[in-house]
Length: 261
Image 1 (cartoon, rainbow, N blue to C red):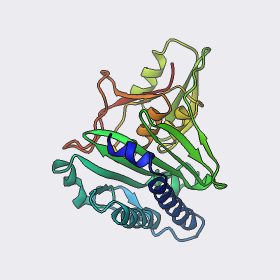
Image 2: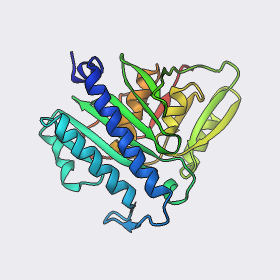
Image 3: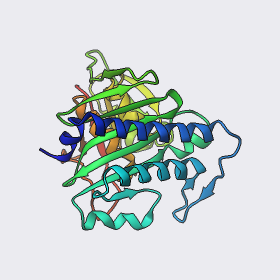
Image 4: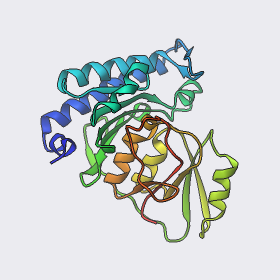
């Protein structure tokens, strides 16, 4: 049994992780609703806000307490990027996926936590702070959504026989992606979404396919990738190979996420 299955089967561990994600959600939304975001620009020329750092602090502290033996890789800790070279199992965090969406106040940002085991994402948690939702799941584990009332519902991919519901990034709909969409053999409905919510729309049965022919990093995709697989979907490179995690290069190859098509 891999670690993800052990965690899913332990109600106390799942509760601790869900409580941790809920705490991070609340920290993010508190800053989102305030007038001060304390925006800074990192060395790699990407933006970071107080919300990124606050959620990261919460997740790292909680994971170290509950899983002291498992190292943590985070977008907000550059030194942690070397961990996969020495460890086959680690947590992968993107404390605020969609920082630009956060800054632009369009609500479509998430908090992502994934468990990586032997190059695979085996368990993912995606917090949707604006709606106070947490999605979680993994391949062969099923996927679920818990709302603010603590009601838990299973989510599943659903196909649409009449058309392809194609989900795309609001900020990355480039020429290559447009050409990919044009070559699909059904009528198209384009669904816009930000952050890891693009995967979640497929996992919930609200979309069919998400082609990503633009740069992403492993922490952008790992959590929602696991949830999509748990709901019956797939994520593969353009050549059909699996999407791996813990590579020497943190950037993902181009990929396609699918539901039941």
